[in-house]
Image 1 (cartoon, rainbow, N blue to C red):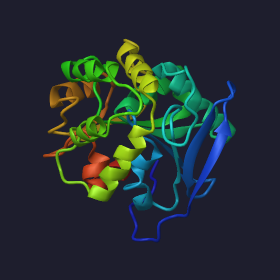
Image 2 (spheres, rainbow, N blue to C red; image 1 turned 120 degrees about the horizontal axis):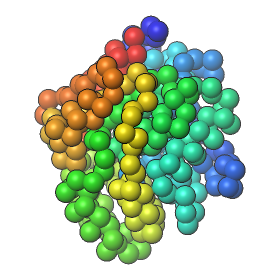
Image 3 (cartoon, rainbow, N blue to C red; image 1 turned 90 degrees about the vertical axis):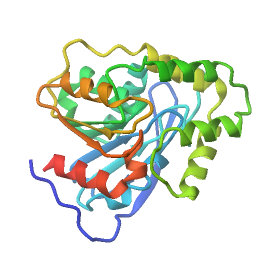
Image 4 (cartoon, helix red, strand yellow; image 1 turned 120 degrees about the vertical axis):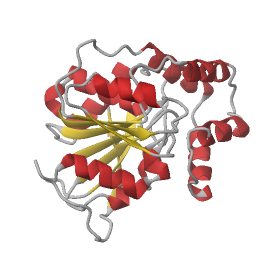
Length: 272
């Protein structure tokens, strides 16, 4: 299906809303664009929120219906004691899609969100028209993740500013506006230590299906990703039949932060 090229138009109006899930958890999300437009759901990374996509949402073509939720435990969503397995987060997104009357959507997941996106595609492939996995790998069990776990297991409330700053800056290889990074850091500090641990344990435990769903897939990343190196990003792409692999030169773990314009061009180009 041909969608639309990026156009020099005014950014669509963005609204913030909430939906209450079946277990009573309130999920916060941002939305922009026409209700009858092709739906794109942006799923953020570990400790981030819908703010993670604030650099790219204004660049999305106005014809798209763009939705960016805060996973439970993150941002303005509720922070319950449980529900942090990757499959449970995927279930939350499917409930959100039900509430918004979306039979299917383009699912774009970054880092932790990429594993949630994979779980959605496994559970309900008919509801994923296209899958874009950003800053990802086959599983979240490499040496970098295990080193992060040691640090996260030692976290206490309130979350140490220095830890979060080092964590967030370790994910980028190109300059990102300081105001954006400061906001991302403050956002991550709001997540309780118990949630940091539960989410990371859930991500490490996630085991994708051996047979990948037949969903049109792109793997997008950077050659300087310090979390999932090129070898892991390449291995992930090889697991999906006909997947497109695009790695930005000299970009780290967060291409949508580091090269937002190029990221949107690549994403929209893939959707044509």
